[in-house]
Image (tube, rainbow, N blue to C red):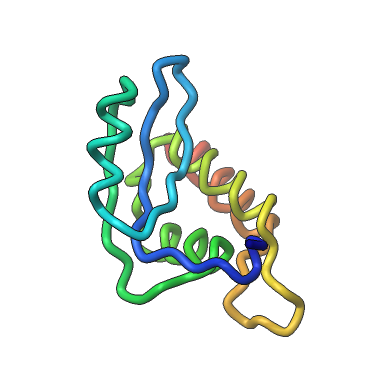
Length: 110
């Protein structure tokens, strides 16, 4: 199924045993057990208010300050925004420039 047609109801972040922080997508909060079993740390999954596409999730995570200033999480959000652009007719898209400007603001305030 294409990223443009697949929706998710749970999202969050975890850090793999290799040290890579990524945004995770699921349709069941039980994903936490699988991540923990595989050695992930810093697991933080949340239920979304509605099913969303990946580009919508990037916008939602930024709007709700999900990262709370954590640079690794902000970088992961920027990555999914860049890799999953919204279709041109979608007004909820997160522009990569917007994500990059938020990251730049965080660096200035740090």
